[in-house]
Amino acid sequence: MNSLVPYSHTLVLAGGLFFLGAACTAARRSLVMILIGVEVMLNAAGLALVAASLRWQQLDGQALVIFIMCVAAAEVAVGLALIVHCQRRTGSLDADRYRLLKD
Amino acid sequence: MNLYAGTFYLLAAVTLGSTALAVTRRNLMHAIIYLVLSFFGTALLFFLLGAPFLAALEVIIYAGAIMVLFLFIVMMLEIRPAEQPWGAYLRQWLPAGVLGALSLAALVLIILAAGGDPSLPLAVASPREFGRFLFQKYWFAVEIVSFLLLVALVGALYLGRREE
View 1 (cartoon, helix red, strand yellow):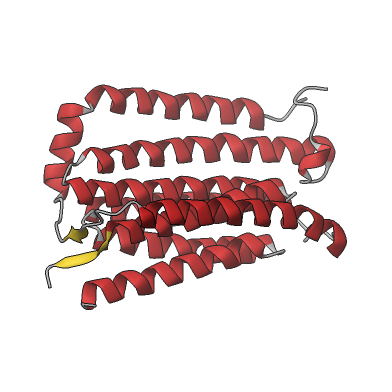
View 2 (cartoon, chains in turn blue, green):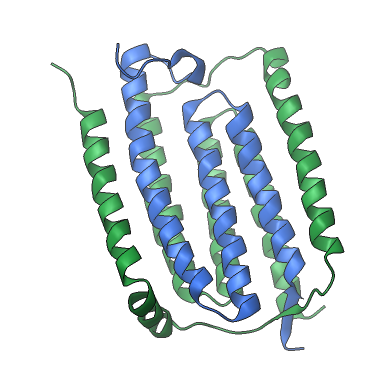
């Protein structure tokens, strides 16, 4: 009784989450949704790392998740600043209309 | 199936379902709220997989800070739901969905066919143990990551400044 699910099931779950994030990033036009897709992908990677950490009883996977969270926070800060910049320049959040960082 | 496995599958269903709803919403607010639910599900999964400290961080950083930042930006910019003809919408989703589903199916097949699939043991890494490990083995990476956060802060300030 002292066991959880098979390791492969956690990997399938992480793969499904990653697929949802990748599809969101590829298909949506709104810059906010693209950023959300990237967040979902990072989250899925973290889930896979925690499961692997439990599988091999090593803490390295959990340590890596901390760094993933920091990278996600940094990415969101810069990404949202870019979104505000885009809104001021082009007046919309459509990714297709955001071509130049500097006029 | 014991209680832990049942909890895992329930949380997996909640997380996948709310993420799927989040990435398909037209209204950004709804998408963000669904994503908060998805992150709560992931936090509980972390807890179940023996990482209570990371579960707390997931709630504080992802569901708390990052999603509130998203909400703040969406409210600040007064974004209207974009009108997009349904045809153009489908034209982008179809290739992305088909290619993604194919690669996901291949991934699932590879994982399930690999064999030698042990059940995960039940274990918990206490925050004290985890913190000691992190700062003994990865102290330099922690410093680098803190520097990365500083760079992101400066970059966000530079991009967000108002031009005269």
